[in-house]
Image 1: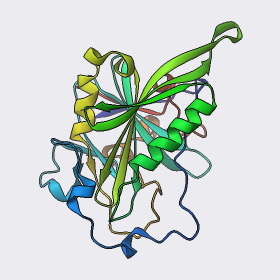
Image 2: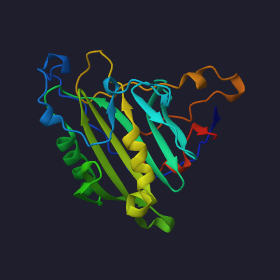
Image 3: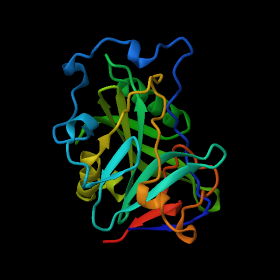
Length: 251
């Protein structure tokens, strides 16, 4: 069972948001069926809900399902004003990966456009961004500017991974040691490979955040262990090591 904790620590971060759809953009259900070659995903996952028959090994967070890993902590990002979970971060040792799933068109992926938008935002803020081929195809390796001690600017590495699936897009932001040390990245990669995205059947505009929820075990927890919002969470806080609320998996 999970152990819930609160952490209201203030951390500096650089916001990188996925832009909402244009007002005249059609709902994804209005599009034709995709060419499978256009939406090719990495071998070995992440997976679509339709590709998984046994749910027993997964923690169901709504649009994102995760498989438990020994020592992994999950931190849910909460928009207190709207009482909405906006993201989940898996922490393993000194590395972390922030996960969010979005609606996408049937016929084409969105990662190329989103990757370019993120790169522009980061470079405009004084950081660096480079497209490289990684474990899950083309990804964005960045150095994010953040305020350091005594007013000095420091640059923190982060990797943006994008996976285009059938009517969904998964974004994974790797931070900590796994962002800059390849030898430390395999455990984080395994978390990403195991993800199942449950798109649902509701018509949604492309790039709209797919809903997340507390797992059933958490919603049925006694009042003294229930998670409480930790204030309005930034959609893209890339310093997950001092955030909450948390679900700490005890194994």
